Length: 266
Image (cartoon, rainbow, N blue to C red; front, side, top):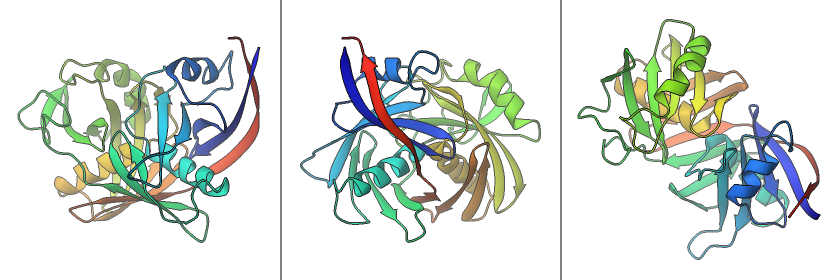
């Protein structure tokens, strides 16, 4: 029996296990993230040393698949590495599979993250359509945006929660998205506020998705539906997303829930 030390963190109810000594692996992600036989989480990650950034991470979804990026996860990771003195400043660089991400820990405890530039080119998202900002999928008009991971954004006047649960499992593995996709159903309340429900790639329905909030904001701004700063209401809480036509910035909370030891048969 192996003992693995961990901490549990959450950002708007999007929850993560962070390993304090062990390296994250796909196998551990599937075991530890299981909500019946494990700890329960949407993802698992561990910090690592890098050559060209202040720090990096190994990150896996709950099903063991590799996660290029996670907006709520990066905020939790930022608070974790700062509290453990793995970095010695409040603004630092993190190496991810989506590129270098810059989180800043604010005085009020929230984290503002420079998420970089959104990817709008169909081949790089990737999505197999000629016009990624306006195409049809499962009877909906949709936009595709990548924040280092692919997103299918659908604006609706209907019940976004119900639609995400019904159509998310159909759209996530759709043939138009060769690497699968996150799926967001979005209801705009006004030019500075919207409601978002998400079916995450590799996780299913979650309470929040930071990269999804960013992707939906970019898609809405490009369609002329939203202003440059938007409050995104998710089931787990609110995020503030800013898009200046170049980089996307996300601001939100990150909270440690508990710490403990997991007993793993190996």
